[in-house]
Length: 267
Image 1 (cartoon, one colour):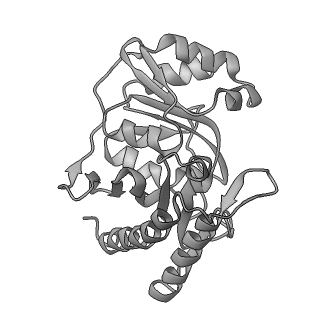
Image 2 (cartoon, one colour; image 1 turned 180 degrees about the vertical axis):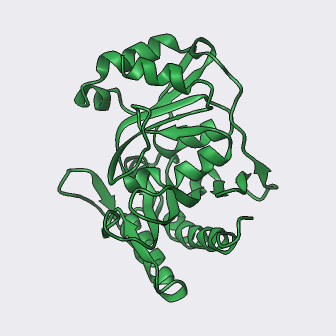
């Protein structure tokens, strides 16, 4: 372990345990309450309860740390110290429709605005899956009560042999990159829309080779970065630049494919 982050990774996994106990109980609940946020995306009572519980635990165990979350906000750009970046339920649309592909995302950033996350945990209790990493430690996953095992990206070296996972094509149209995205689809051997966090975790495991989305928020991305990079992958914005800031794009590959994919998405 890198000194200073081993305890933080342990703590992040404990936060994920707290989140799982809340979210899994509310998944499929007949009395689940769902409302629309100002941007018309759904938020459930589980989203609010998970983030509230994580914030309360951080306040007690790490009182000098800040929390930046999807539901209750926080200033990621201005804060210079340690901050936990939380998406209480990534994949809320799946969650409210009974689709089990959703997860709690927890990351730690320790540095100036734009600094890379140093800890990431992705917990998907409805899939009985969890992934985690800290800087310099490697990335790991566990299924149900089985043993933990390391994550490692694939060795594919050409898009013609690569599997691409993506989210909604309409987002690429809205971002003005529909033509470039279609070029990437045409170049790849296999394309599937696994979507959200799951695309990136499959990439970290070597099951897919490319994952990309044109616009995301910080809490959608932060926990994914350490897991992908510690598994040997590369994570940038879709133009190949660092994926920092509050609103970001995301491009993750196994590494060797990165230049070819960047060229296709920016052609």
